[in-house]
Length: 343
Picture 1 (cartoon, rainbow, N blue to C red):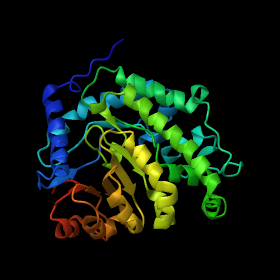
Picture 2: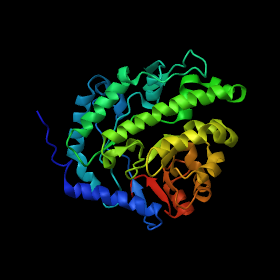
Picture 3: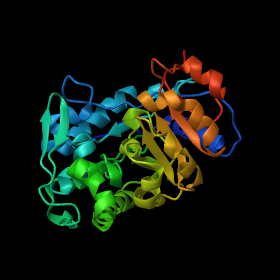
């Protein structure tokens, strides 16, 4: 039986969504200095924990999980009418958390202590091969879920992609410190595997772009407060804190640029550690349109604000060491999206 959602095609709510997204565009174009607050997204979990990827239904019956998510959003969609804080109506589809790519590449992924982990591959760096995606169950279920969303008949919510993360993150997930050693001893092995991983990631992004309408596609994990306008991509830069600017330029820069380059407007790099050594190269990269900083990275807000281009935004998640008030003193709200409720 076809399900009818009352609010997920409401033109008034769609206009409210588009108004918020146009405000972000105005910030990119230097046309607005409004104070901007973003409060993550709303989504449904079928278990007690609010993190949706803990739900068994996501893995066993993804279409049923999707219907439950949409039904929940249908009941709460009017939050997007808030005048002070942007509450995107969105689903975060995050099977296996940041280890989604690892599993597709053949790593053993397991759940322990309320978190996903993966074991390293037994094969050495340099021997990675492109996986058989057509017969990969994890990828098929991701496709099944995305197709169900595209066929749901809803036009208001956005669909947050699985954790395609970044080439460096994925390589470290499947090899650990052995990858860092190979950067010095056998760089050609690293480049071989980076090319394979990045090829897989770009193929996935392109498939999702063909399947889901652009206005409803969110590569930037809306559940973490990273909602961007249509046509922007996303990579996770977490592990870049482990390498020098020289190694980033040599091994990583081209692959982050290639992943973001799949999208017409470039996109976002997520940062959560000590990454400020890379600000000069991110300033150079036309594909990097914004950074999202939380936890340790948020403490370096002033470095990012002063070091990045005027057309690069900052998604700022406050923390104990760098509060919203502290951030206002640094940026005055200029080029800054505060991932917090407006008080």
